[in-house]
Length: 211
Image 1 (cartoon, helix red, strand yellow):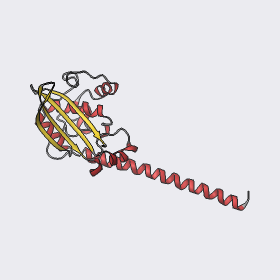
Image 2 (cartoon, one colour; image 1 turned 90 degrees about the horizontal axis):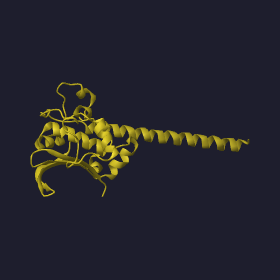
Image 3 (cartoon, one colour; image 1 turned 120 degrees about the horizontal axis):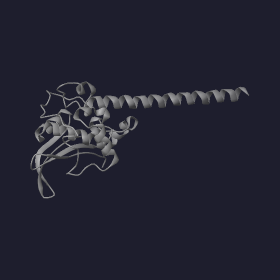
Image 4 (cartoon, helix red, strand yellow; image 1 turned 135 degrees about the horizontal axis):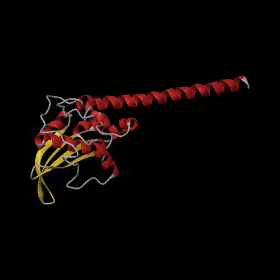
């Protein structure tokens, strides 16, 4: 091998190594950013919110508008979070009186997961007013309780939202690597719930919009 070819080959290897280091650094930077964002998202502020009871699947089956879960991801979420304690960070799971504000956002990796956990948490609180308090504790801008209708029947609705493109947070995401990019594209992330005229929690929802 000529001296020129040897130098050229060495230069290519060095460039490849530098490129690999740059990609690795970018990946770790994305993971670290995601961890920081999710840690901020789960930081509940203020005193604990008193709950009525601790909800579970046996006593209050998860559903939406009276319908039972049909999609595989919903059925999986119901099994994974069969008790409200399952939705909380580990230290709260072990307490006699857990703080239901301390949801484990690291495990809220899908819309199905957060819908089931909001159902468990809001059913435990028992009122729309306390659900609003919970949403505020998560750092969300809230609306409600407000009166509405569904299928010609009265409802009470609450919601909380934030703007990922502004605050850099993504509360629900299935991938650590893509969370950073998604937070720059999604301008609105919304969490909502409805109760019927008898004060029974009927549905929870989560949505992200990039339009």
